[in-house]
Length: 63
Length: 139
Image (tube, rainbow over all chains, first blue to last red):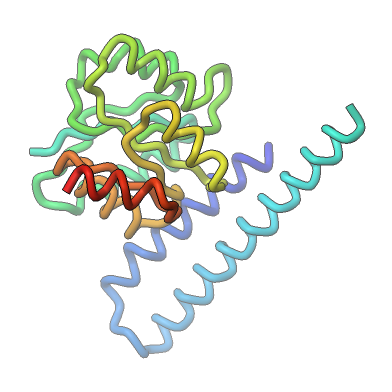
């Protein structure tokens, strides 16, 4: 699996969290856990994209 | 009805975008394409009001697909979506003549952008001086 595919899957998870959060009462444990899932997915996207950018910069330097 | 065409190489993303968009009354996803080439071939069948175009796709990226689409359909309204949004890419999208730019995972951005595009106004996620000029001109 390419990093891009993983980012796509994580993006879909984030979007589904947003859809679900509209159905969940705010301030409840479910809402907090859902927010945690969203934050984790968002953090993973950020780390993956930063890693990809670093790899691209390295390969440009090497080329 | 606002007719929307979704172009993304990832089937999970396409179905997620469909779920997000079709929750809006009066919005319908009239077609999906898994590549830029498929999008160019099937665009005429769907006659969309707005096309969501992923940036990173194999063979032909979203900017190139948008350029080809624009050559054939100068009035096509295209919103670029990407999982890796950068201001540089937004500038390229703007230079290519696209109507909007959004991160793929920001539901609120997608909805706001499509509403703006449906009103004939551009919508770009990153705020830049040119944006306010565009928006002022469109208002």
